[in-house]
Image (cartoon, rainbow, N blue to C red):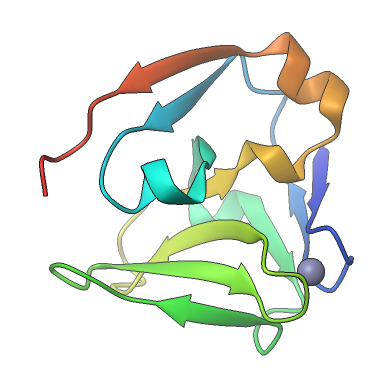
Length: 114
Ligand SMILES: [Zn+2]
C-alpha cells in the first residue's frame, strides 16, 4: 500500500497498489499549470480520507473530471470522474513520499490542445 498526503495533512490517501514505475506529466491546459504528476488507479483502490469536505472541486471543459484541491493548503491531490461508474481516477504522485516519486520515470504527454 502507498500513502499520500497534501502538505497540511487535511487530505490523505491510502492506495492499494505498489509504488508507481511511471508517472505522467500532462501538458494539457490545467495540468501544466498545476504541475501534477499523475498516477492512475481504479477508484476502488484509493481511499480518500476524509471522503469529502476537505477539498474544493474544479470542473472545466466537458466537466467530466473533478479536480480536487485541498481547501487548506492548496495542493492538488487527485482527480475523480463525475460519472462514478467510470473505472479510472488520477492521484497526484507529488503527494506521495519523495523516495517513491524519485524512483519513478516521468513520462510527458502533450495533452489536449485546449
Ligand atoms: Zn492540505
